[in-house]
Image 1 (spheres, rainbow, N blue to C red):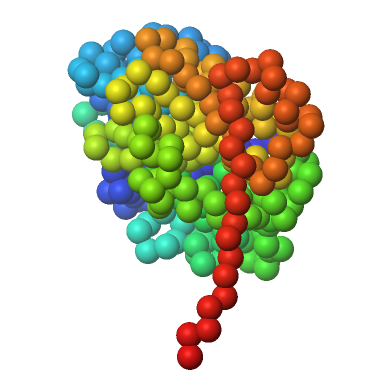
Image 2 (image 1 turned 135 degrees about the vertical axis):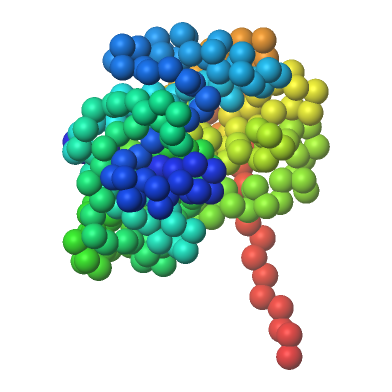
Length: 307
């Protein structure tokens, strides 16, 4: 199955024109060596070798930041396969579409030296045609963003068909209405973070002073929200239930927690699942997982006569 990734070509897409003209995508991350003989099949092996290299060039940065950067570099150089599709924004609410047509190669002394040849299609996708779920996912902060779960919608847009608006994109979703509601809830949580009880103890994870913890991309999946305690001792993985089965959401939360713990062994890692309700399956699952808590949200909706 083809992967579809949204790729940022330099900060803010500053190297997009160069990539379009040269027929490639690329990355930098200040790893200044040819990686042709150092691209193992497993991203973990790559991270193990290059996280110390990255941290050496970014003293004071966390292992979590290093892991994300090295994971993104591995994805571009090795994880994406020939035939996979890439979307890259141009800053005008449009996305250029390309197909990867080569293996990794290195161009010393150039912008984005770690490269893959790309056949750019003679078409652009308009963000206004995206479903809300795709808009949210494709807007994730970071160099790489896996949006393969929206393949049917994206293929319809590429073929100039009118896609059915996607609400639930996975067989794991058992309640599509809850999925749609909690997709909006994530935006609410982020925008109102400082007014929440949890916001008194935790802040949304930051890199270089920017809040990057929303839709935090990792090699094992995308975390809805990654937060850090104000005393820097604890990292918190927040997952919205989004109508998923209890077994799935608990398993995904544990997977993300395990990855974050591996990247940051000197910090505690906890998890919170947020949903409309906790069924018996979820309650029983969490009895044996003391580091994950469940928070139920409540909606108070009012209509007030204005005139």
